[in-house]
Image (cartoon, rainbow, N blue to C red; front, side, top):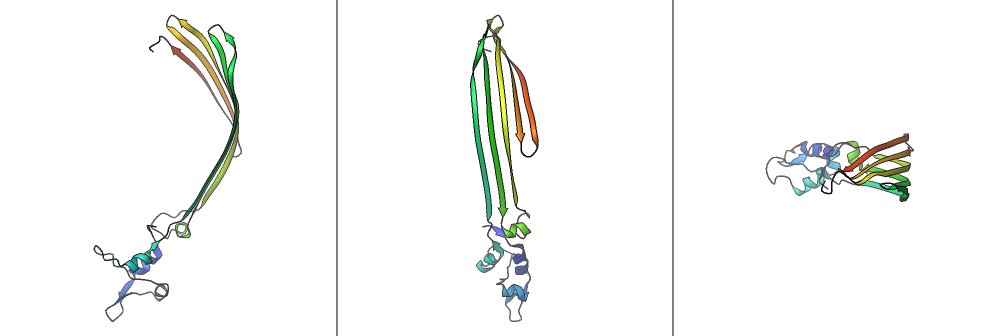
Length: 178
């Protein structure tokens, strides 16, 4: 609701006196299709019939689908002098699909909004990742804790192929309150 049929609005504006003092639509084909003249000047001047003739329903068919699967494992590998070397690893799969099918009036640009074409697309990705976190110091002067970590992720998209992401990080807590 709330959309305007531009073609009907144009026909409803193309109105004039029929010679008997009645305002009518001037295009014979539009009259055959039920054209009702519209007066846009002044508050309350649009008749219910004219409003019905120029409005158009707006219908969209939008769809979204997402499929996700994953397997993860976390734990400590072995003890270091400052604590355990922690590890996380996993495999993930994700499939995404989205579509938007606007109504015919919207597709042709004959309503009060922008012309919009249907859009539809999908992709899927398979990923593997691994992260390590190693504590270097604990309860040392100016180092309540100090650790380093690395992470790597390999992604295989069906649209663009392989991508890699990696990071290295350090975390330092000098004292309990900071």
